[in-house]
Length: 487
Image (cartoon, rainbow, N blue to C red):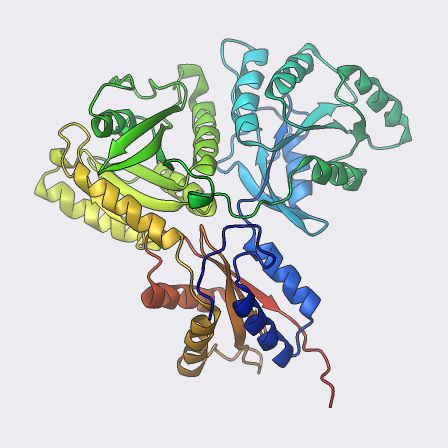
């Protein structure tokens, strides 16, 4: 059995030749279509998904277009600009290729005016994007604000697909043609509301997006491992960065959100060189109450996407908030290794510690696998525990289970804890493989649909058996009709 981790470029992703042959033999024995199996492995075994940002001024139909791209109504749509959403990143698929979509709607105008607001939100999204869809209302035409966004896009140098939205019929094509004047190439005439023209636009998006890359993190890139310090305003991210650096590298102020831009710092800690990113980056303006949360989400998402480990700071002196949970969810959904650091621990009395433990059990029970450190950025308490926690999370993130061992484990699971019978049928896991690492990604082939509760049970047992401390697990299940076997 080949237990070697392949770092991209391998013909079979991360599976060695011997494991790949063994796995495909299992597929043949179970009567699966080998081309479909190879496609499933390719889909599950790639690295981070490419990111598409949807930008434009308010009320041009960005959220409607995002819903059309992802194929379901998730982005909130109202007939007014500035509708704020909690979640801004979604996963989409077109022509068999998967990618992430960042919706840049949901912001509040501030006193600096419309142009400044659009530029700010667009910059944050473009920073994390591989390509951009620029949405313009064809019925209105190019405005001064649109022209300002065009300048921003040109400076960013990212591939741009121009979407002329609200073209509901042939009469609107002439309006769309006027947008050639923006100098961004062909305007794709689209009605996000009715779906008209979105297929052609998405074809252009796939040409603009890079293919989902092979594994690019860790040893394949070289250089320091990248650690994102994330958390809501004023939890002590900058103070922590200064403490681990042993010098005042970042401005610290009692006012929440004094850090304006992410700060990358090369720091030696525990005898190892790391690249820390302080992601405070949010100014909480009085006029941007909802919008500030939205900007926070975008900046955090951008930083997390670039990192290998997310160290989420939580203010232990306050109740765990919805925003804390959103940030943790963002890191998990991005597939990053995760460490939870409870800051300001030195300020807690016995009563607060008791209630905090209860909060952790009830509010964060779904991430019990994440290493936890109780620290004080002010006094330096337990800072020496941060590096071992990060190393533990990275080790789990890069753990690889050989195909033979995994299938022996799955066989034991099926025998001792079979799936419940539903509708007179009992679905069964036939075989599986780990298609990738960073984070660990598994593909299970089954005889029928596996319920969410059973999938969670499989994940729990995988963690008990193989560790995976500090990393989310991605488990996809493929159900295939058996092909006829030759007699």
